[in-house]
Image (tube, rainbow, N blue to C red; front, side, top):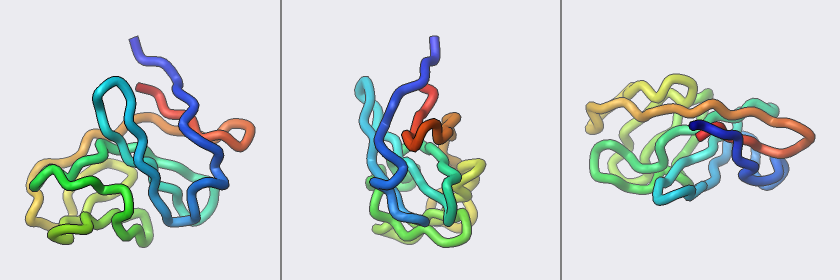
Length: 103
């Protein structure tokens, strides 16, 4: 059954920045938009399983740091290869200055 997990303080993620989040054997990436909007996606690129945390984020798009595959942060959709499989997304929100993810 999914539950909300407290990941970190919002201020720990720079605007258009990322943070890796590991939980129960899975790796996620938290992406902060330019304001207080946050997104949670599977944390490994679907092309070669490279960690997406630390990837470049611009205008709601995260780029894999290895081969530059691009994904929509809102939907997980592949926008540019070499990846061809979308990322799974997870509900995320900010509450009381904390980032929460439902996993």
